[in-house]
Length: 320
Image 1 (cartoon, rainbow, N blue to C red):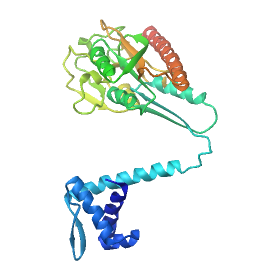
Image 2 (image 1 turned 180 degrees about the vertical axis):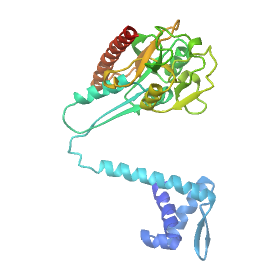
Image 3 (image 1 turned 60 degrees about the vertical axis):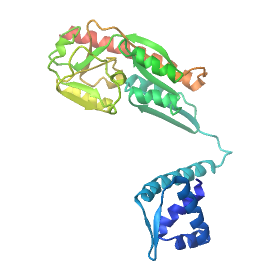
Image 4 (image 1 turned 135 degrees about the vertical axis):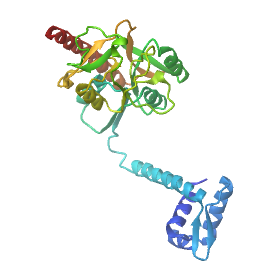
């Protein structure tokens, strides 16, 4: 299969006939017919049927047409990209994939602030743990940020090992419950699983079939899944829902100063082992200076979030 053959099929669909397509491409009708027939034989399908009125695409042909158009568009974008003046300074590229943590955003912002003038293409993606791991493995991201818990560490480390990725720990912190300041449980210094019975549960959306080990939240396996569950795919929406309802969520419990206007607090879960925050990176690969710089800011951002959250929690208990 060649791009030339794809072009012929797409042009025939646009023109409605092989003869018109040949005329537009300045080719012979027999040349296009032969090329299309060879492609049909290679793939084992028929693209269209011929009649005096032109051609009519088969269901398989219409399906193939969608793929052909997409491939040709991608080819054009690549050609346009590398037709640019190569004497110009190439843009710096840096991509971060992270579970939905505001401290990762802070580290990314610091990286931007310390980036020298010049062209660059930087990307940050807040997503699920499964996608973070896939992004780093498939080199769509230079570095990924995730957490491990005692319950999930075995299976996550097994997956990381199979993809030759390494988890580098930056902090170990107690898992917490996110609730609003005037929540009925807000007077407690620690919250147990039984305390949470009857309250709505906020969790982040996961693709169907993805194991619970990849969940964004700290998993409480010993309690039944709440009958009232609010599924969200955006961190700020989650915070807003928590701030205005009796719902709760679980996780790192870390808040950052720039979001201090929210009415959400975090309280440690009683009797639960700590969770570990860190970054993932390909094994046997040396981090670039940009990755090392970001990881430094990430480490500092996490420490700042820990100190800020502890201070908020202490002030909250004093005000009760």
